[in-house]
Amino acid sequence: MLTFTSPTVLGLARQQARTFFSRRWMSLWSEVKEIASRKKVTIQNLRSLKQKGTPITTLTAYGYPSGVRCERADIDITFVGDSLAQVALGYDATTRLTLDEMIYHVRAVARGSHSSFLLADMPFGTYHASVEDAIRPAVRLVREGGAEGVKLEGRQEVAPIIKALTSIEIPAMAQVGLLPQRYAALSGYRVQGKNVASAIELLQAVNECQQLYIPTIGIGAGPGCDGHVLVQDDALDICSGHKAKFVQKFAEIGSTATEGANAFAKAVRERSFPSLDAKSYGMDSEEWVKFAQHEHIQAVRGCHSE
Image (cartoon, rainbow, N blue to C red; front, side):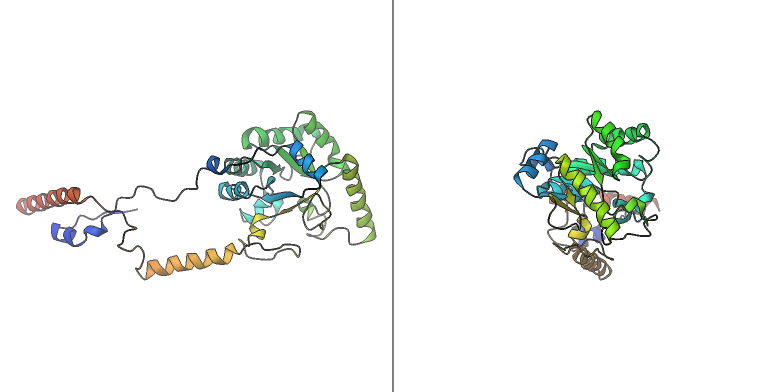
């Protein structure tokens, strides 16, 4: 609860500069439409990039601010991955994420990322029962979240689902290799293709992709892919903790943000913030005189009533 005191006229005269009238409680991101300078990235554009041999850029986003960063960086695919379960929501696994939570975050990212192709993960459990059951959550991600394509983990076993989704004009992407939603069955997040059996299986999956002539987006899969994706919080070093060997830091936002938060707390405790300078909001001098006179009259009336 905030309380406001009404000091005497003398006190008001001494503390005139401390009277603030807030016009806005927070800073706002600039309007994204003003910074959008390129045409919308479509499936046809992505295929064209593959044909030209131009690497496809993909970066995760979990909310409006991270979506805006993708927009400003001209990222080709803004990917709302289920990794948001751990990175943004603090869950211990991606399997904890619900469909409603995913839709909420996709919608927020969509408001910030306009020109990129918007891809969303289908959460664990939304496409495992049957083909028919998989269509409903995919439709919700598109209709309610604003996604333009969906991704699901698996190979041949998800082929019927992908066929069904594409038949109703929902672009679908399969994920091969390490499948985080199956971490329990895989005994953890283990690198795939390190033994003969898994390498053969992975090669078969890659060959299938090449036969279809569709773009392949790699994460820690080497430079031979058509494009590459990183978790934005890893690439910008926003969050602390373990990071995969393949992650490269392109900025160090996390440490800078922590330093800033510590500096803010220190300034408040030392009473050096907020300061009485031009950054504060003040009252027009004429209005101040009227206000002081009003308070003086009220104070006098109060004394007489006693």
